[in-house]
Length: 237
Image (cartoon, rainbow, N blue to C red):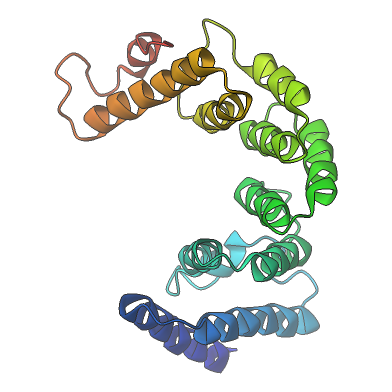
């Protein structure tokens, strides 16, 4: 397995070289992912409990290979290049490979639903998102994914009902729900409701501004560690 990890490192280095050069094909990225699946398969042939969770691959190798960081970049590359069939396949493989009992694969499911919609697999995306939202009703990514799926299926009333379930007049846009506000902007762009589009977009922009100044340490009005007061002051619209 050490030999496999060495090859993995060589391939990831080539992946990032390709990224810098804006290389058109994804051959090295795809070969690297295939090698990852082989590492997991070979490990489980020796120990059925090997790397049941994705994070255990990094944990078991002292984070030397930054596997999860590479995976995020791989998924982003597939998405940005519009390789939606490949993105769907990789997302499904990741969901199948690991137990996801200790970590929730919200980002992978979100990308999967987007990849389905981008391929015109509207009903499949809708079914996936409805099931996900039913299983995790408090997950903002599940709610946002379902909003997008309903929009894609032209079920605009359904999409607005989901928005209203999660956003009321006094709901503040924050790090937990900004993905829902972004989906709401898309909905109201689709329906032509300029007033609500502006309101949702304004709330999201205000959150971005406050977050950026907070992270940069430039907002003298708030103290680090005073997160509760900071969150209470964020405007909705």
